Length: 355
Image (tube, rainbow, N blue to C red; front, side):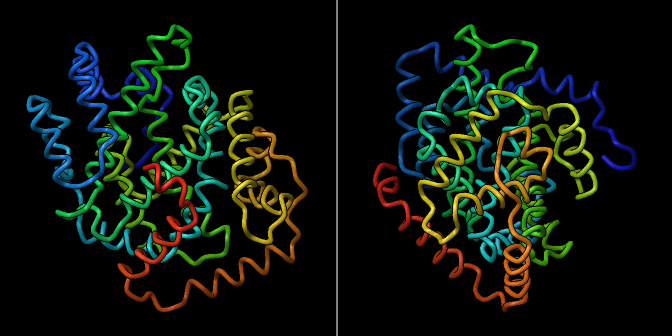
């Protein structure tokens, strides 16, 4: 896609009617047989590793989504993916903070898409566990060797793809879904979520004062494009450059962002979680003020994030410190990644035990 904005209302209306047909067919097949369903559940709960992915191929040999789970798209560029992973390692702590302060509430503003999260009750009733699972997914797919022969990216991505299909299956079966919202976890909402983890994160880093080059932005967005493809996102919803990503983001925002009770409740659960795990000197007002700054006044108001603006001197100090960090020598990205991931796990010992 290039040139004019091809993300028209007609195009995106069709995308709202589509889930992930290949994995949806797989789930219908598996759920029709209690033994197969139990085998899949056991695999989903099992420990990650390349051999574990191979074991699923032995149980379900006839399904493309399983057999081709470890295949990169033809347009994937390993050099760019490596550069994108190194960028993540360098900024991992800030990126993980931005997921809670910016990316997730940004998604919650898409009222129709937020309905599936609201109805499933997972985010509202198991907030800490679900946010931890999302964080682990990001850590695993952004690792320096995540897509190598000993990496866990392909398996982690397949698990998310299967989980999305299971949520679609149960949401449609329970009779509370309104078809006017589109299919649960449809292609437009998947595209918006992928952008919130890529384009919106880059936007957030710049708002925090970090210097992000166009090359680093392209590399980080490329690795997320690969993740999007492997999670079942249609290729015509994977922007080929940053300009197209901005156009897609703007189109989705115009169509989907509005005030909703569901979006506000999800945001309330998220902010309560953030406050409960906050070990910094930042006050609740500072954290909510930072969220308002990152999201912008209009979106923050839609989500009822009520707080005074972050004081200018605090914002200036934070941005200056982050700008200086941008110019520190990069170091060994594998060592940096491993140290940061170990710190994250050490901060969540109870959840690590459960997984």
